[in-house]
Length: 339
Image (cartoon, helix red, strand yellow):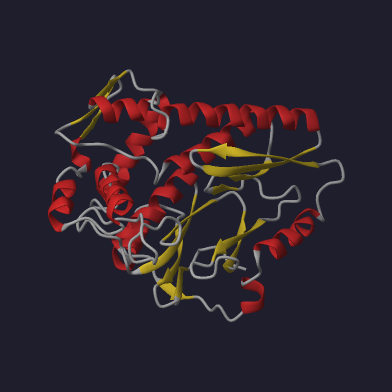
């Protein structure tokens, strides 16, 4: 299959694209200017899976919308109880502690199954068993304020291999000592998809879902897209691109999101092959039919690099990328939604 071509994206509209967060929020009322007069905007905020969550729904019946939002947050809490690394009783924590888990919850099976898919098709650029490597970096910087030694890095890399995860309907097991998985590169997207499903069950057609990754079912009530901003990877209070989003999902992976050191040379987007942080790009944003796929593909693309990344997108219909290289140049596939 032919790779999807990338093209340069001009950032000459600098005044528009570098609006600070406060200025952008000041624009928000204009997003609702054409909504049907009976529609209400109901919003609820919280936290889940280590990030801030904002759910915005548009519906004429406020009581129904409030019930839908309450159900969505209950769903998020259930997902976190299964997939969180930070809840000792979660199924994921128990799997990592014991090396196997019987009767896994459907959330865990679904996410592990899709994570294994992306591990395979990305040739290991996305690898759900990268947790030992991430833990090594965290421990090394906590204790020494420096990257791990080559020998420690080699030992951790030996524990990273997605092919050692075995999944069936009845159990999940990790083959070999020292294995541990993380779903941090896919779980937030899965959560956004589940929220969308819950809202749909309540009859919510128009919503903007922010669970760390975005979903935009139905767009705004008048059918026009929501307007999102992609974080500028080098200017904390600026956007590098505005994105119209409707009936698609959006996820971004960037070297600015979680750094181990004082600069961005060592960050959380680790290459399982080298054990070191990927350095070709500053950020990758993926638009896809599901937030779970957008989430995983943004990580895989960032680690794999541009050439392999576009080949990876070609295997997944209706997926597009917006890329910011280390030198500041921006590239995008033809179908990426841009204003």
